[in-house]
Image 1: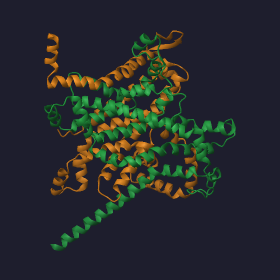
Image 2: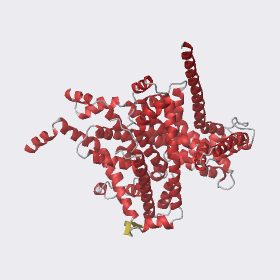
Image 3: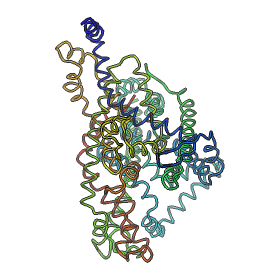
Length: 304
Length: 316
């Protein structure tokens, strides 16, 4: 009885009830987190540090230290190359995706004819460019043929890009930047399809900025250009961080390393090596995330 | 004085018009870039193989045919697959949304000591790539014991692979595909609802459960729509989990990736003599068939969706 009373005293209050209900609400997630995340994560770490043999009584683990990691980095012919390739891809893509999606979000936030239609179209990549479809799209042969057919009329276009490149080089722009820009123009579809969610996040962020701020700036004589750099950009800068993290994670999920890890695990049944690869992959994501977050978060502006 | 003012006005007007024209061209051009693959697939779906090589045909086929669609449909076992996929995506979507909404609300409002540590767990689920935990998950589900409880009852572990159970279990416990992101969305949204509403409900005699279901949830429609749409679409297109957990059941993504192979077998009984371009054509048609239900759905939902993002807490 006494214990009951004590319990009531502790958890009968408003704050006490919050704790109880909080635990009730969190329990499904907590169970899943333990069974479907934490346990597999630890197991995967154990696999990566040992050789895994399938015997009659189940899996037999023999501790071998870091040799799986060494094998993944030095012996395996593909892992190194593919990991570095996907890291380079990310370094190239992330700034483009961020700038592009912010630009589009600013445009879609303005009033113009056909805004709602174009908004719907710009969110289409969220649906179209995910999972299996994005992968198949890249290797479609029909696309190739159509491009071949179209290139008869497309010479003018190619020439245009070429011409612009030369003008920029003559003007003294460094050749690295020129190549980066012209490369991004030719990969425009890829960039558009990568930035569906990011546009959405930026757009939602821009809409939370109070219109009074812009009004005040306009009265003080600010142009639209100044308003963007002095108001919009600082106000959405926390979201640049969010989008940066999302883009990095998302582009890693699309990288061919994932497939290599899966085929090592399920086709050649080398669970130890596969887990070691997966951990290396995870560690490299974390390093990139930590570095870029560190660089960006210094510039982020928080209103409160 | 007067004339000067007038001049400036016109200059501003010209600037405005120029910008709106540039903006229009940009928007139309980029929309075309996005729509181009879909349009191309629609045109490919009706093309005869010989049209593919004809330099005259660009968009409208010369020999109109429904063969591609028929082949793709029969090889994919379309209607059956559509039913399976719809069932799977709908079940996981509803369960995921429910469990993530609960967790998101708890993280936003029902805070206690240790909430921050638990939230770090959510961040961790977002950051760790699913590949890292895939193999232990696979082994775990093949000999599923729920921490030793099931063997106590039945004497043996259960093999959950090749059934919908892995999807149901992970989504009911908010650990399915990208669930961390959904928890985050819900948390941000619930944070934006004023605390006074909850306190008023408490004074009127509602407990936390009632407050959540009767007051908070109906207010959270934008977040609900966003999460429902995301999780449905991503589950529909997902090939990562479906190829691992579902080996024989027919769902869209697995059927799609094996479509050319299956078609070659169906046509010739082997993979040797068939034009790879024709296979690719049928596969494009297959992609169109897979995304068609999604696009139709999107047409109906997009109004709510576009509205909802204006009010969701996707934003921090």
